[in-house]
Image 1 (cartoon, rainbow, N blue to C red):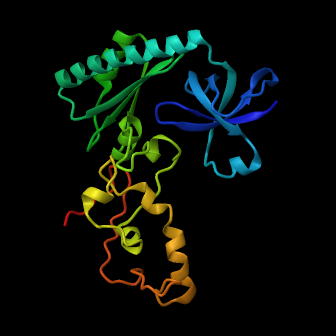
Image 2: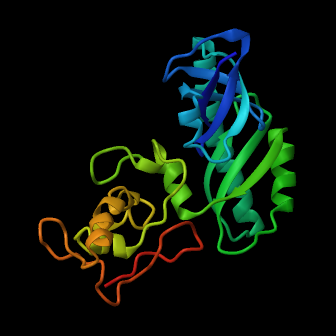
Amino acid sequence: MADYVVRYGAIRFLGVFAASGGREYCRGTKVIARTDRGLETGEVLCEATPDALGHLKDPGAGQILREMTHEDSRELARLQQQAKGEFDVCRRHVERLGLKMQLVDVEHLFGGERVVIYYLAESRVDFRELVRVLAGEFQTRIEMRQIGVRDEAKLLADYGDCGCPVCCNTHLVQMPPVSMRMAKLQKATLDPTKISGRCGRLKCCLRYEYDDYERPDRANGEGQRPNGHASNAAEPNVEEATTGDSEHPPIPQP
């Protein structure tokens, strides 16, 4: 029985799923799968080879039940529309209860096992009454999931200013740490409006070529590029504001 790497959930989890019945799936196939959260839709990315597994950290596990049908697609569209109404209901109750939290998104699992509420908050929120009320209205399990601003972009953002879909909503699984030093080393503009992503933090893509820029510096030890241009690696007073979720500081303003 072949195993596959499957992407699933609003947060775009990755898991290693077994294919029931010995079926084979191609990359990009939409499937119905059983996860630890319930019955969900997912997308097959590749076969779970040793090389692919080496790039995963703590992947989820589950089973692919079948390829999505036209009926499944219609049901998914219905649930997504229903989730919009559930978001409005949840927002009304949050305002009524005076909870200091910002709703971000509502995810209704395909099998109806639970409704996941994603929210932002600066401090701990006592949402027990909210969960009780929502469970009564939706007649299912309610899961409250606090996220950071980078996860908010992962849920809601579409395109970056490069014209491509945002990385966090396509191929990125873990948000890499990014610092102002990386921007300076690559001689990128330090204008916060140009090097910040949809989340308001430094763009994740500043990390992609950082190792290539830094490697020659380590080799010659003098902060010189192979082409003779000086590097910013040894410049003093470099701002080390690392981006991340809500616990990390935003981009420093000039």
